[in-house]
Image 1 (tube, rainbow, N blue to C red):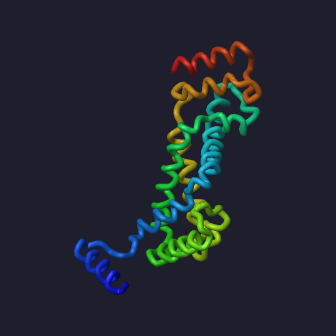
Image 2 (cartoon, rainbow, N blue to C red):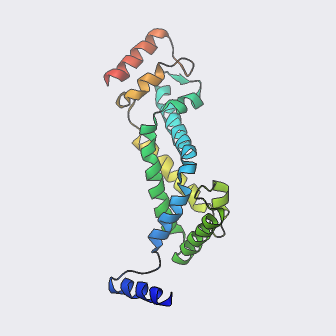
Length: 193
């Protein structure tokens, strides 16, 4: 066994690689646990809620009132919001590298590996993940602000979001000044005007 460990060590030195993970690898590992498939639905729900809230502001300028924000968020296509799941993960990795020392990243990554080993699954809920010693929530609020601004800045114009026309045709989610306004407004979005 010691021979095998020695061989691995010598080979890693020969190729200039460290046996230990780099701080970025630790940060990416931590983000991989936080952004697991188990938590994906919740993240997409949060992102869809942000999209709906920001679209609500744009619609209000056009005299369209959102009366059911939750249904509106649920109707935003996953293909539109899932790209933000990956951006969110990258932002967290960058924030981990800024918020934690190398030693703290090692400590957190090690604790998460131990949790996964003990539980026998990578499907760990947020409460358990955030209870890991040294893993505070300070950077999460900062990352959340960056996500908020990023989504707001990237939100397309109403007429550049053709999926919005389909959503606007759904009864019970929006209130328009009148039927003609609704018809014309939806046609304008469909036409890209």
